[in-house]
Length: 129
Image (cartoon, rainbow, N blue to C red; front, side):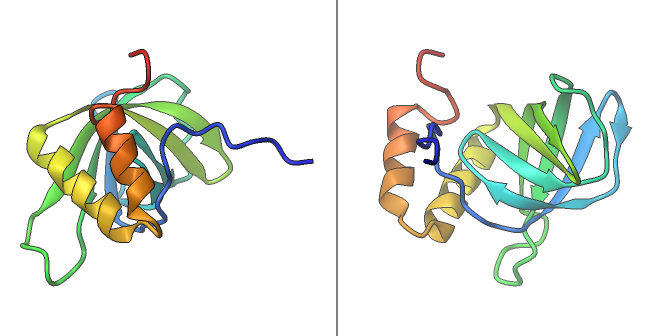
């Protein structure tokens, strides 16, 4: 019997270029595996410790998007697994939040739960935060 899903936020499979900075070091560009309103999983061979603070810049590679449009977030490493990092967002500027919201709604298989999550949680805040 499988475990019930415990996620508060839906994951959306989307592949964006991602830059990761932590401890004053900028690491080589990588790709996202998925994205939610509170975090992302990125492909990487980095072994950053769980809890390490970081900055993530997500770049749009769509020709229809103005050059230089990006999502910038502050975060922390939440999970380390073979070839990937799970990053929880801890801060986001208003423009980046709107880009993130639009991106999630556009790429979600079912945008209604994503919209509900964003409204109920006031952006990237978890319940009780």
